[in-house]
Length: 479
Image (cartoon, rainbow, N blue to C red; front, side, top):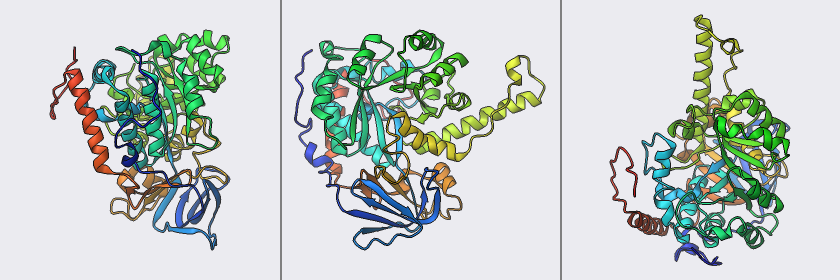
């Protein structure tokens, strides 16, 4: 299949759907909010002010007097860093909850890679990415690592990138080879150089380029020749068995991002830590799709001295917010540690491992770190985002703490991690640009977005021969 790259938006409504991004200029003063900075040097303020100058955070203090700044009243609000989703397949946006009871990885693939993915046009990539990116912003996710493993041609990659740009989200776009169907294999991974030259040469932009690839020395070398990070789906003993040789040959490092990392032996964790590989965990995905033992690797990661990011993975079965990932990780860790404690106290220990020290219960700050500063580190952006720090990019979320489901807010961390929802998010700022305010995404033509989504979804359903069933208990594999 040969499809020429395109330099134009891939929807007739493209310029109208998300609206033009506002210029970054002037100064914004967020006044009188409860500040969770995630920066030890700044700490937390029960009531404080935050000054944005252009795209960056300029000052944080209990009180700031800036006469020429535009003031945003942050009283009764919690101000926190924008969240970072370290692993999202954004192209699947129009397939949301198409397979909610999916019980295996094969079930997931039946409703994505093995069916609809084969029929994606460039405009479908645009719609999927735009819908996902806007949903992320609405949910307080200001940065996303876009695992785009449906890069069927240069035009498909162009469309995906243009959608991220139009949405105004900060993103690491990682195109990857499709799993099935016809696609332009001659352009992979050679097209990465074209993409880098076309879209990623401007300084201080919101987007950066990576590559998605399974363990393959040649494609990894191609990415590294361009200075790109490498994103890999990684889990289980079989994949873990490849680590020693890769590490010995110097092919693992801080430019690697490994997703999932479920059911890895201790020696694999030791290699990942020594090599500086970045990892993310998927509290819902690993259980939903029964990856290995079905348990996310959050406790394994922190138990081996690593600080993972959190990821939603995809929305084909469940929602797209990181609040839920924090909560699921919290309760899974608490449940498993309590089960081990109970097992030891009941006298049922039969193996040496049964007597290992029981981990301490995870605390909320650790989960919020995973969703912010640790996620930023995983994405290679720790110097830019993930905390409210002087000089960093102004990627900020403001939550209404006086909403009926959050009021009274007696503990800011508890409010954010255990109770907040996307509906509580009043304002989202990315790189100094206000993208959501008063609880609404700015500049968005909802009718145009829905029209583009309906057209794309209808095309995909018809091309794949799928008959929609709003109450289906399972997704029947398509021929």
